Length: 346
Image (cartoon, rainbow, N blue to C red):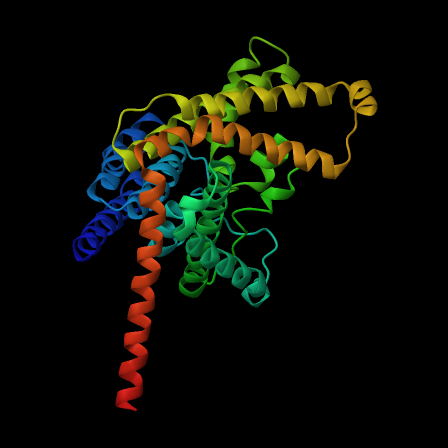
């Protein structure tokens, strides 16, 4: 644990230095290829930094914040696009908006309106989930797979909530949520575009979807050009997930994860094509409850088929849950120690 904490300090100190460089020097360089070349050493460094950890959680979190979000934002920044344009007013804001999955709301609300009860319920469910892992030998593979999906969702929500609160305290920014009840999605377009991990589609739209659609419009009508854009965005997302998997299991990609996103890209495109046929939609309109069941069920079944097998074969899921349990026990031990010290000294 101590070695990992030292690596954590080294990695994020390197990130601070690198992003400080991006804040002061590249903006003075002409946007486009020249500015992109000036930030390319930082992009390369952010690809390497997650490999400094042996902990799955630290490696995955660093990869998500630096390799994925920061790199994509810096690429957009090179071409005067994305959330870093206009350039934030100071270095701390530039650092936070580069690394973290945040975006200032158009109509900011007071942080006091955070759904604290909902967050407390999620933490409680997460605690119960970690306890259930002690009985994993008695659980069926399907139930265990469902627990892994819920675990992933809750852990992302909890981590990002802490990030949101920290950024609000430091910078006074009120931030939009990173997911919007994905279990209520009524279609794949709704799930991927408006409910799950909202910062990722917000990055992929200007970085991948929009350029591909502009290129496609030279060959086809605007209405059909959106389909290559959708497929390109899902393919890039699949390749990035392959990289995230590599950071976790340190094995060569099998292509299953990319196939998962290609499948969802094709199905999302087909879904949009069907929606364009108004007569079909009027004849086959489903109730929201049925649509939600089909959508969430498809994500769950296809995820079990293509997204999780490599993780299960490598034993990463067991290590991931073991690390989570170990970390909770570590925090509990530290809190009890601090409480005991306070009682003794008072």
